[in-house]
Length: 451
Image: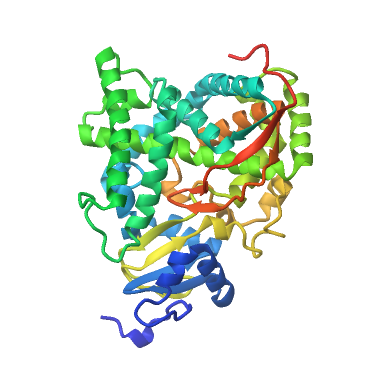
């Protein structure tokens, strides 16, 4: 064993005896992390009872863990709650299983396949826009609408099925399991899910709904007798794919594939409602590039402001607001000793608002993503999709989807905030608590050449 006097552990707050900063983390995790980083530097040690926990808020420290030495780090014990939902899907699996499943799913997200998804993305977006136009002006829960739209897009593009009729119940179920997964690992005594507590009963009911949908999707494809060449077809055709693994990958794709993008778009509308000049500049760009037609993949590079607005929204409100790794062996990060077993917390929500890497970080400024300004910023100061080997497999899919939806919706509608108080819900993803109601008015008409 190493002499403890030779260790150079990161600094951090002492907290209270036995519990450390546990109670403060339950009440206000973002506030706790932000204060600790402000007072102690970019690599901070927190005490959560017996757990060793280190927060990383420096791009080089993050790069070391995610890129330079990723084999020394696994998903942390705090993913146990998420495993109850996703099983051994790509988000939670490790080692050889993860590498095999990632290699199997990767072709479904290749660039040439993404181009083929655009027509369905446009068509489904135009359908939503037609529904909105029939109601305008109206007060709309845009989070519910974005969830419905992105859920339908995932169903059509990756699984070849129409899941729109399940959207409302799935959205409710996702909200339940997201909070359950977060709360499960924070309990002093995590009870098995079969214990009939109110929380467990709600969780099991939500999981039955999600599992039922997954079974319907898989059974329908098998009964059709044609595996197809989409993601579901690739999974069904893999010799190594057991029924349990198939279920895990499908439910992971459903949840991760629509929830994050829905949240990102919702926060974008929230920001644009307070910055109408930016929304108008986006309309001007869209009109100049597209005229009255709908976007195609080849148009997206020319929608530069639209892209920067999506990127800036992801900076201020990253759906994957936090993630963790756990050291399997001793390591050294920026001169500090990291003993084996230490949980490394990375918080994009806090990193993206650090004045060390971002000028006036609380201000909405899409121009901070102009090429010349990006070139001067460390690569790992911006992590909307994670980093390293485990960068989100659907990052390009999500960006294209967000650009297409933004280009159509901004062109046709204007948003105004309501009196609703908008609070953060820190579940597995960053959601607006109680949805996000906005006043929506029409500024254009659906395109005649929509798919």
